[in-house]
Image 1 (cartoon, rainbow, N blue to C red):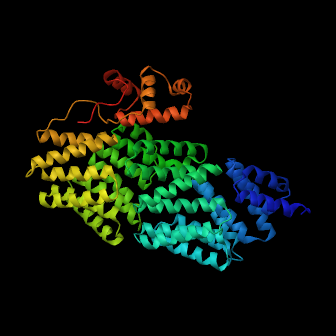
Image 2: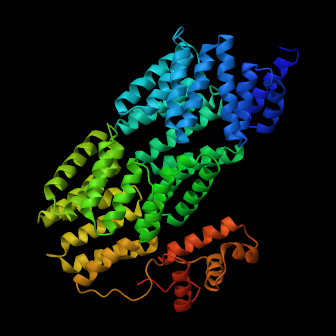
Image 3: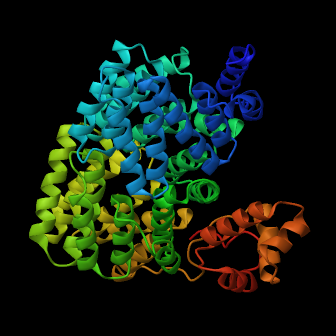
Length: 551
């Protein structure tokens, strides 16, 4: 080791902590050829964050060997765990398992170190049940405190917190997550990669618990954090979660933009990480009535609960409830102790079972949902349970109970400020009231129709319109999925109607092609049309200004 090596190493790690990737590369690169472990390690991370993902992984593999040769088994194990994770999220499961095995093997002679905590926390992330995940995260937390590893402590706390929330122990989970964030902001974390993963765990947990305000606050912070530092992988993952928050809050056009940004980030980084993003966008497309696009998105889907949920909703919209129920059963089989995900799958399972004529299956799912609502104490789970109970009661010819449960769901979804679900609950109430209180049912169905229309929810509009027609109420003519277009969107629609591509629109309006694409997507959503041809037809029929007045 030359005399200047310590200074270059210190400079490189300072640059990494400051997210100054080029400066870090310049500091570490002169030392990398000498196989100095710390230099290879830092150089690998700097290259990875700078976007040279394959080179970053290869360099960290070299760092593993250098650490092992130097006798620093703890750091060797940590690096091997990181490499294992990269191969896992890139879809190379065998390589991932091999590197995790290397991490365990290098610790065989000295398991009592921080490295064993990193192995434990990686096993926690792969655990088949929430209970196993929490137990392994606690083991990692103990190791972090025993060996004073701040990065490991913050990360283990975040994994534990997310597991506790998933299990329905939300208060305990949030306490762990708050502790993780407190440690991070107090400077316990040196590696931005660890900090980014901890942030994602926090936001995922908040979203699962229906804590939209808290999730939105952290999403804004992490978006800024990732964008300022150029962390593409983190940006893609967190933008997907942010889109869930936006969609739940009724901001569907903004959710579309967030999901498209996330997909773009995944394509530039880890395409294999895009499955949750694709599923979220497909689910939005189903609600918009754009079923062909949803089908295309879900082609070649992964066998994950979110993907199966989106596909089940698509099949239900296409009138195949038995197939939808079977898909949801597969998703539920993959959920072990995850209360929040189980509740999310059970709600549409009740609908699919009722539509398929299997009322006993719907009853069993609704009863399980009620148990989860009581166990978790979360308003979101209670709201889903109440809506499912309302639909079941109507299927069992108990209209009074159906109205009562629909009102409970309406109140709780309203408190959570989830307009699509509020409209669903209102429509459920209207259906339950149709027999005895037809005038009230018409009023409620019309309010639901208007709410769906404002969102661009074509599928909901169709259901509300069918009920209104059954009740003898007229549903005015006009295009589906109305939404007021901004002045810029009116300009873009006029150019679409003239046959221009996104690239040409970008040239004419002096905007990027990506921004032009975002405008076109929002226009399609607001107008409730499936493609550019239908948008052009709308423009020909109604003009390119604001949509007709609401009925």
